[in-house]
Length: 205
Image 1 (cartoon, rainbow, N blue to C red):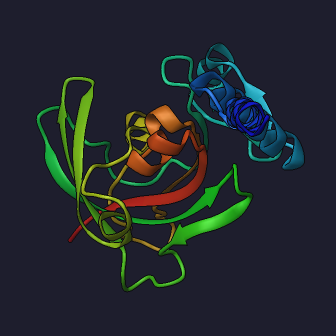
Image 2: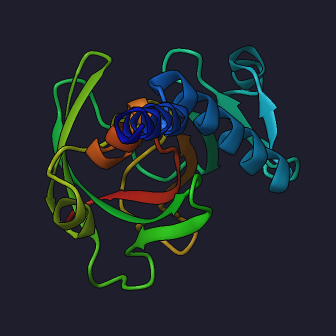
């Protein structure tokens, strides 16, 4: 009788653990739901790439537009295009980045350096054709995660200018991004966690 009872307890424990187990598909669905809720809660208007192109590759801030990029699933809002030039083909530059990082799944701020402007992140970027490669040189991101730059951070470089302001009317480039786990850093990827970023970019002196 005791043996039978022990077996039954073991079976119940196994079944309970199976019910608690989340598959990768479950986690991806949770991520999609969290992104949808984030978009709804913040009254974000999602536009297509075709509309984005028809608007001159801009997003309307009055309508709180983000374009969803089909190739990588990143949602992008261009707040300011920036001054100067884009990173040119064959060019290698250091970019000064100030950002805040919001964990969409946890609904909380995860990290930021935008409140400490004297401690920006520095990102080494190289462009070959349409391909950008990058690594963090210093700053919070390399300390918290690794030198690897999230792929989602490189998406805006095709659309913004990264010069340094030379006059009172010049502004640094600024974007907002919803980055799904596959385009994020290692922690995002491992935990299937989407993040929202607000980032400014400009060339290092």
